[in-house]
Image (cartoon, rainbow, N blue to C red):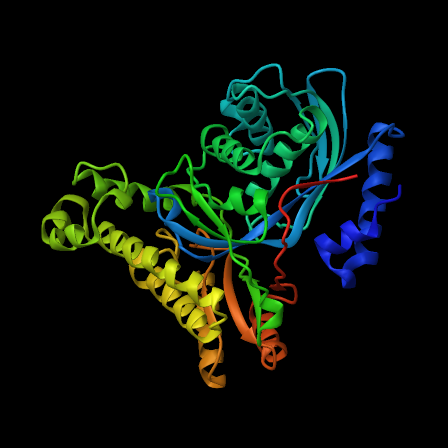
Amino acid sequence: MNLPDNKLVALYGADSLESQRQRYRDLTREYSERFGVPQLLQFVSAPGRTELGGNHTDHNQGRVLCAAVRRDAVAAVEPRSDDLAKLKSSAFPQPYEIDLSDPDPKNGEKGTPAALIRGVAAGLKKRGFQIGGFNAVIHSDVGIGSGLSSSASFEVLTGGIFNTLFNENRVDPVTLAKIGQYAENVYFGKPCGLMDQLASSIGGVLAIDFKDSENPVIEKVPVDFSQTDYILAVVDTGGSHADLTSAYASIPNEMKQVASLFGKNTLREVGEETFRAAISRIRPEAGDRAVLRSLHFFVENRRVVMMVEALKTKDYDTYLRLAAESGASSNSMLQNIVAPDSIGHNQPAALAIGVSNDFFRSRGRGVARIHGGGFAGTIQAYAHRDDFKDYSQRMHAIFGSDCIQPLTIRTQGVVEIR
């Protein structure tokens, strides 16, 4: 196996070249042990993502700011002559075998990788693309519960496998993202928006406007956080996402309930001042939490525009101030910091944000905010380079020695590595 160093460096950076070479060697060896000596082994990589702004706005046709990161899922893969998808992933204890000739959702598969694979295959076939069986060994360092959207990375990776093996890479990144979302919504059973999949499929820092959800406006924003005084990181608090689907679903559902009171499907179709003028009428019909979450949507939607402009002009002080405002809005209005049914003493995300902001106040710089869906899992932090060692030690003491992950933006999305 000889992979071009320039491709590995482009994806992972020069400082990770040797470790990535070894990673791909290990994938090749494991593939041979499981499926026999490969005839023409191919590799597909799909990155995780980090949300920078627009917390819980995409599902109501809002604006978001997000980015692909260098942590990724990689598949060593070959086509089969039948319709079976056989795979083993480092993220799951057991291997999977899925008969792709049966495209219908299975109740017993909901919430499993098998549902995502079947859903991606069905979505591609519905759009007229080719599918087929394959053998795959997958390694992912986009950990489940890491807050970097392991599900979107896996969906986009699966779409990339079908694209590489059977479609000569003719499926464009936006279509791959939509098919991944379809698989997660319909087959996996989670009502996610489209942001995560777009970040993984396209790569780079993206400003996305979902006003026309079928044709989102996507702009790549030229920014390199490694050239600033701050290190972008996520902190894994150890909180589980298990049994939180209803909590996640309540946010878009409540926003859409408010929109329905105006005869609209989503909040983006409702004028902000029209909404504000009707708050007293909305309260008894939708409840105060729905009002607050809707107010968060409108303010966060405007804030994304300002964040993008700050990045374009390299005004990082303004950008960080807006990131802090986004976090405060998620806490006080969106209310996705503490799980609704959590026991009072078990609030890991809230604790991580509180301790982080206490540390940053003592240094006079830095920002912490909830990351992604919220309620558990990870928070996002911008720590000054001179403070990062001390900040890491503070987090390690509370959440464990592996809790903090510095992030580097990846410019490429899903990609075949020949």
